Image: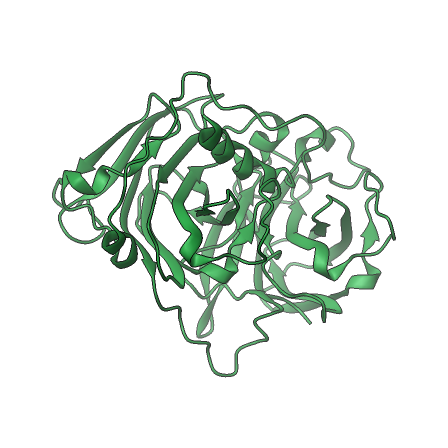
Length: 393
C-alpha cells in the first residue's frame, strides 16, 4: 500500500503548484491565484491493492515493449482497482506491430488513473520513450521511480484519438516534491518503476484547472522503452541549461489549464504552441511547464515570443519549490506578427498571497512557469494565443 500511496501523492505533489484559478472568477480586480492552497493531497482508495512485484526481464526494459503477447502485460498494474488492463490486437489498434496495452476505466471523482510497471531491472538508460493514445484530450504525468523512492517526472498534453510518441531524455525529468533524493540527479541503474497517470478528476480547484472526465475511457500504450542513447544536441541550438521549449517536437510537454486546447501549429520551418479557448467558460486559459530540470543559475530574464488572435492580457508566473510565486502581466494586441517579450527576473513581482524569505526569485529554486490569458473579456470566440521559443537568458 505504501508504494500505491507514493504513486498518488507524488503525482499530485508536483502539481500542487497548480491552481485555484476559478476561486477568482467573481473577483475580476484580483490577480489570478494559480496554485493549490491548503489541504492535503487525496489518499488512494482503500480498496486499491498493493502493486504486485512482477519482474520484467531486463532485456525488455532496455529494448522496449511492443505488447505483442499477453506476457508483455505481466508487469503492469492499475491503481484504480476497477480499471481493466488487456491486450488490444484488433487491426489498426497498435502504434506498431500487432498489439498494444489498453487500460479501460470509468472516469469519476475520487479515482486516480495511474498505470505502473514494476519492478524493473535497468543497467543503463538515457531516455524514456513510449507511444500513447487516449479517447479525450489528456493531461498526462509520466516518469520513473528509483529504488529509494525518488520519483522523477514530466508532463504532456495528449490529443484525442491519435497516437503520440513521447521520448524524453532522463535528465529532463524533474524530482517530485515529496520524494527527496539522497543522491542528486536521476540514477538510471536505480530505476525500478515506470509510471503514467491521467490527471483528470483531481480534487477541488486543482481538478477544475486540469479538467474532468466522465464515463468509460480508454488509454492505450505501446512501444515502451528505456533507451541507452539520447538524442544528440542540435548544432547552434539555444543553451540547453536555459531553454524550456521551442515546441518543435511532436509531444507538447505542458499541462493545459482551464480546458484550453494545446496545439502545435506551423511557424515557418518549425512549430509553435497554440493555446485555444473555444468559449467563455472559465476566466483563465493557458498552460504550465516544468523548469526545475534546468540549471538556471546564470539566468537573468525569461523570454518568449507571443501573438494573439484578439487583444489579451497574459499573466506569466514563475514558482519556486517553496511555492513562492513571482509574476508579471503582459498585454498583447491582436495580429499575425510575433512579439518578443523579455521579462527580467528581478522585475517579477511577488504575488500578494506568497511569502518568500528574500522577496526575489531564486534561480536555483524555480520549478514551473505558468502562462495564462484572461479570456472572459475577449470580443469573440474562439480566441487563441501562440507561444514560441520559451527560454531563459
